[in-house]
Image 1: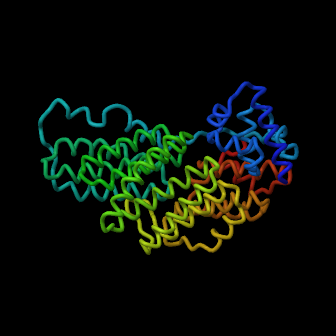
Image 2: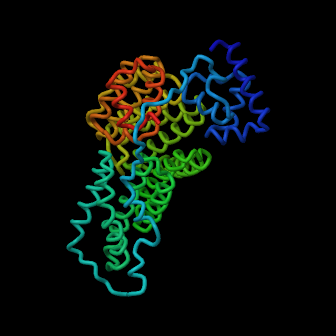
Image 3: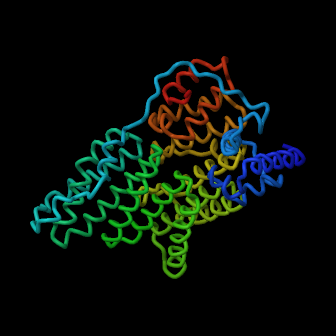
Length: 412
């Protein structure tokens, strides 16, 4: 868009909003943006080039997409498909329902056996392995018996074992929160993260509390409660930053601090606040340089490589596709989890789609699917870009693209 086109576009958005009797704050809240971002759009300062953001605006204003962008592809009737809803975490949702260990509240017996601790530790490690590889059905099945078992043990074990058991329970709830976020069940992620924070505090491990806040903020972002996400994250960053400045930080301290800056970059990118998002990417890079290596403290995978993966995602969210491609194609993420590698490929696919490199976009998405099929088939951003590719291609869509869209249920 030229500056004049941006001004005309902004004036059109303002007129449509006023016709519907909406304030800037009301429209911004409806589309998950800030009032300041919308104000900049309406004044012609903030460009809106991404198709998904245009679609959000159109939906919020109650008009067809073509009213805002006449040359946008028309939605066509998809071929008949059987709609499917992912329910791999249904059993895990049941785990969160009600009190986790109500059967031990009316008794004082201590039936915990210390010999089971190695088994419980191994079970929690497996939970995180399943989470990192997006094996949600297996994860849900494993959590069904494990969470009540941990909760009962933490209540009935002798005092000397309870801190570790609360820590294992906290880590399990963190994994559950991460999985729920990826499957777009943010309400359940909120509950799981809140329980993780409580268990972490009972464990006497303060950094586990900060890790739980990170998971909670992710849930808020998915719910589009960006103000809550920012409040939770900023409060944690301020407390941790003061500690780091006054003490010699350990690598785990730096991993948490850097991850929280990446969370703030995500929050501000989703709000369309370009300069603030970039500022937090820069702060995370500084922390990563201080850390000096890729680590996996608290299953956050923080380090120089993951900062750049997040920089790719942030650039895509801000519509800076060229920058995202330049950063992403120079990265070697093979040392990180399959989930992180697939996320990078997914974001590169989104970036190529923004640049109208449709063949490259499809190639990246198919490679991501090979690594983490569940991510591509359930992630909102992946399904959105697949649907966009199908709409743009129309009847010229390749068999590979249509097959991917059907697997991801992205045609409906």
